[in-house]
Image (cartoon, rainbow, N blue to C red; front, top):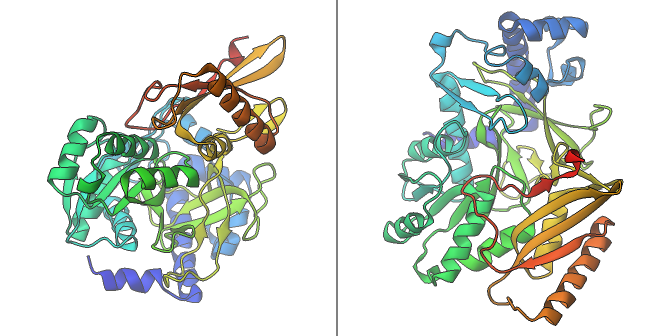
Length: 433
């Protein structure tokens, strides 16, 4: 890969970048109109024709797309190329409804891998690195993206996939892995095992790229403290391309969105009104160059902010904050909006591990929340008085942070089930009543 070309795009003046976005957007809208009947009818219902969209400023004329639109057109209602042009698919988990299948042409795969290469380079990656890909290989859009991006970089790839922690650590030590790619919860588990087995002095990982689920700065600090890795945030969506839509650079002051490929907006989740820089809202993405599955104004449900302030790394791409949660993951407890990430931050600040579960039920019509959380090995105790005092202290801190009273149940280390994929943090039993 020619890094000078990447640098020219990533550091391009805003005027040049906007001109490129305008050109690609106009083409993409016409592409979707011509090849996706559902989207053509949706545009007509909103009184919009392809010629009405000439610049990114015209995006507000277009309707939003949601995951429900994609599910309702399962499996190939949003496919914009002949199936003979498709070389691979990925798909969402389908845990909350029909799967969403995302299609890829060879050009789409090349674009995705280039995006992952940029992310690796932004964290100091080079052809001399050894990249351990501990994301699942399969329908989940994780492992393949990092694998291809590392190969384009010229690095050695260890295609470990997820799970089998003993083998992961063995290869990490023996092959002297320098970069790691995995989910946030699995990175936390690996760090936990590195500390438990006293392997930190044998670990050479300089950079760990984690994502696929919400995680907090407190969790970053915990992983770094236990493992010695420097943790980088990466953002992606299966429906769009997977990891690589946005990435942290060495400055780690937000994730640069790859604006030559994806145009971002922040909108009010309730009204859909576009919000200015710095205001918190829902991230909406338009895939400017995706051939097979050209999503336009797709509502991600992720809550974050954008900033165009200059970054010391020299990149001019807009930066997004770490998502504080998702509109569809937001819990409403006793009338209060609560995000799991808020709870996680408090737990870690209070000296607990990042392994926890939120249990919700309803008693006599009233919401009740209990937090099960593991203690750290170094602070674990069976002293009932100490446990009661600690549980009360955490409950007070949570009440201050989220304005909801929660019961706390402290658990011994390694009590909760681990996962190589996304963690299942919430057990909401209220719907059964």
